[in-house]
Length: 83
Image (cartoon, rainbow, N blue to C red; front, side):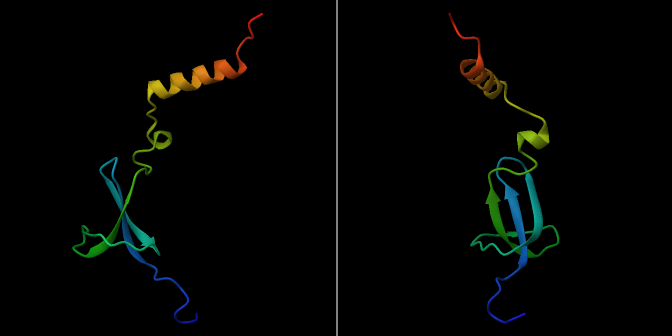
């Protein structure tokens, strides 16, 4: 590989702010925040809004309010036309 043209590929902790979930993986993303991980080392920290721990598709939890809105939207768009 050529020197100086590739981004720094390093261990990074991604933390879900909506759920108590964090994962250590490798990435080229840069962060000014750091966190002390379970192994005692300090890693860059990237906070995310949604992960598999908080997304409704993976958790199986959907809010009834959003489903009701989707049903109303469907009925308004494709429902029976008034004569």
